[in-house]
Length: 174
Image 1 (cartoon, rainbow, N blue to C red):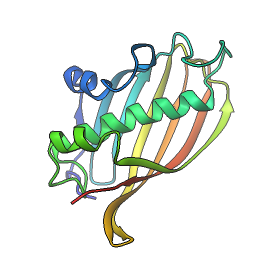
Image 2: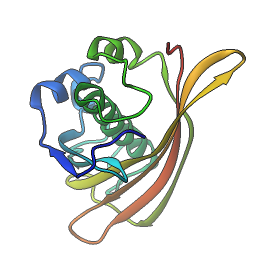
Image 3: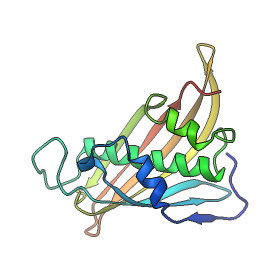
Image 4: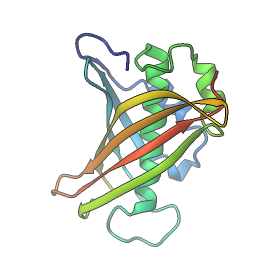
């Protein structure tokens, strides 16, 4: 993974964040801020979220697995978009933001998603972090794709905690 020799941080780009969230219905835009950090060992994003009301179920009082996945998607999309914009991740060196917008929904797949809830997380106000652990170029059925291993975690002010791993496939890439 290509990353800078020293850690660099990128504060929330509100215009980029708004564009990343365009595909989501208004009441499903959970991601409020996202700070990207890139260094020799990692590329990650630290986020703030708020889910005032679940988009599909009566109030459970805690973050549930469907919302964990939606929040993951939003922080992952932002991290990839910011990485493309700043040239932070191996495998995306030739991508432009126009490439990202074209690939965002049809070509970025979650191949595996696992999570563990340690303590209930308050969905009204919580934090999250996602890290790209590796990005490799592979060929499946003769078509190249990017394979990415990631980790994520969520927490709240009262000690709520959830963490997990996800494997991504970026298909139809050049």
